[in-house]
Image (cartoon, rainbow, N blue to C red):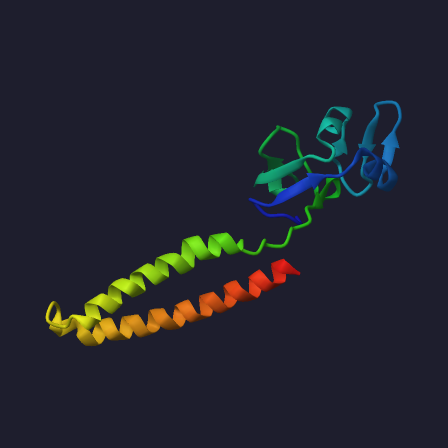
Length: 152
């Protein structure tokens, strides 16, 4: 079996199924020579549809999916092209990551400049502030680079 539970697959087009298999013109079903299963006319409505594999049938001979009770086999299905992961929008980077980091950094700076409030934590606060400044620097670098690419 080519697919595993949870995979998204697409049912091949009717034309592709007919072109690569034997069409029984009496019943208008498609028979795959290497399989005992047939693709019957009632399954035609799912051609081009995306399905999710939920479980394997008897002895792993077929798949059961999320939207119907039909038995699907590898020869009936095709992979879905995976779209590349979109790059975070620069607004999202600024509002969700950079601005909150700047806010926490400002709080840390106030705390480290007032050691009389928490004198026993001054070293830890200074270290946290340094680490946050470094992370913020690299986030701003990534933000600026992406902004330049989006401007092109």
